[in-house]
Length: 294
Length: 216
Image 1 (cartoon, each protein chain N blue to C red):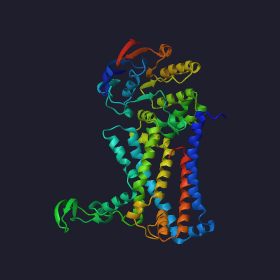
Image 2: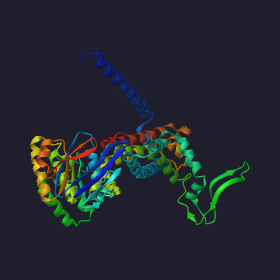
Image 3: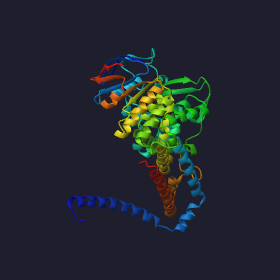
Image 4: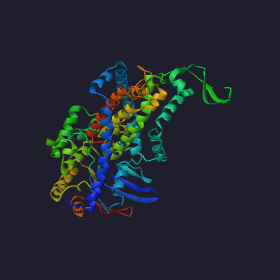
């Protein structure tokens, strides 16, 4: 093959791609060769790591499931309807993607210190003050408040802060943004015409979504679930801030890596990291198999 | 009888349809022609309720259906791309409307089989849309629309994806379907020969206005 200018261009581009992939291969190779498979197995079988693995699998699945439940209606709305302020709403939906992860955790932590957050966690008794807005001075004395008394008792839903439910919520907040993005893309790629025809055949809009759009979008739904699951698996900052890193309680795999590194146990951190790489590759294979792009 | 009274549709300050008025008698095969982008598909979408007109009204057998939802109008619609439902087999596509209306399973099966026989698609009943040719898809789309037992059938260039040899066969099928089901049909086409073979009433759209070229 003659090396003309066009071929030279493709060759340079291929070399850049190969160099990038080689860099990643070296990174993973170096990590994998840090210790032996026997020591990985020993680490992964320890009770703390097994608990963290189990908790990660459960919380990631729950967070991804909830994310998908949210992503389908939001993605459908954003792909099918034109309305004023849509571009702003579109940008707002991407906020969790661009926010620093620690900030997401801090937002959650602060939200559950507000009146609404406390009601969600603990409920409120009839006659208790509910504050909409409140201003305090430096000594904690109330300057002014927009408040009203609860007309009836409201039971709390569940405890989130520093609890397993908090892990799921922290994972869900970020994963949902990725799931929404995937579902929006999926519905945008699907023609709306079959749904229009379904309307003329006797469907309501909900029935058209249920009977026509959702079956057509099932591959996108699998991809959205997997992407949300993978994002949840790698989530660390919001979980650390909002749910904590308590061993055998709220410790998930990324927390384990951090905890093991902080006590100098590099071998355990490496074993858990490689396990997470394996899980991520599995998710990528499933997503690719569905034909959706990540 | 379908009557359109001064139907107007404007978008972003542009008038796409201007005072469209026409009456198409029952059991008539009307053919609508016009240049690309003149508003033919928009008119069909307004007729079946997918778009709301800016002004004007539409009567079907004397009943004002202008503000009814698409599912309440009793109008069948076969779009240009046929829009078969992905993931549903031919049997489910044809049985879609009767099933929604709660037709009992036995009667539903009979209706599906009867239409499948009429359209010559019995061997295709268990196939998915991806496994159908252009002509087969067109037959399935027609059978699906007719299974809802519409009073009016709107066809948006339904033969455009077919080659010449299949087109003659499809034209004969459409004529037979219209007669057998005593349908009022509004058929959009670019083909003069198609219009000549099928049309009992000829309409032409230009500059957002509708002209009646010949009446039945």
